[in-house]
Length: 204
Image 1 (tube, helix red, strand yellow):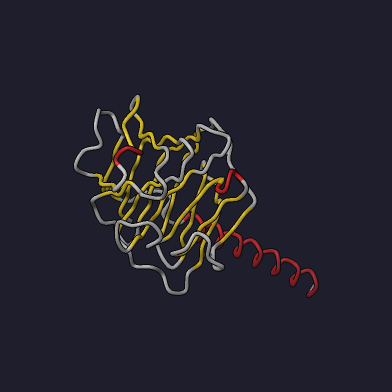
Image 2 (cartoon, rainbow, N blue to C red):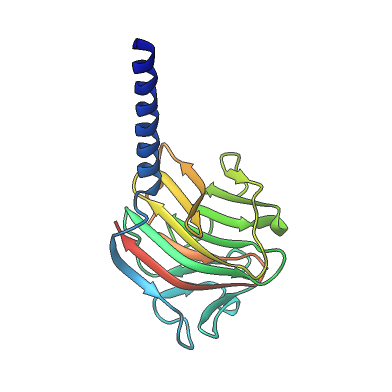
């Protein structure tokens, strides 16, 4: 009987642990207050955005089109909430993929926050990097992207972890013991053509 009770106790502890893990990993994926949105349904970028490479970014067919930005980002002229969920759609228009954004940047400048790249370096790898996309502390996966596929990105931070979801599934999670306190979000690009759409930012 003792063996049976111990076995049942272990099962209950396992189930409880799985529930806690699920709850922790899904925190912030729902609810929140909409803080900013942009569907890019207009002709020009407008006052909410700024860039040092205006030739690289334009509105095309109701989407934000970018190519040849050479890491001069398109920065949102609003500050991010400390607890936040950022959502947008992205499509790579070439086999190089290379879809990139930056979050919690200290200033509107490349590599002043976290850098998230899907299918970078000619679609060889994907990363979350802290201040340096080539840094030794970057989080790397060999999972990459597909040309022409619409990806729904979700980026969540409620504590010291930066969680990145693709199409509702956890893709990468960066655990930072000294989280960056930057304020800015930006789309970015090296050379590959990419489209972005349906940006939503939620205060959690």
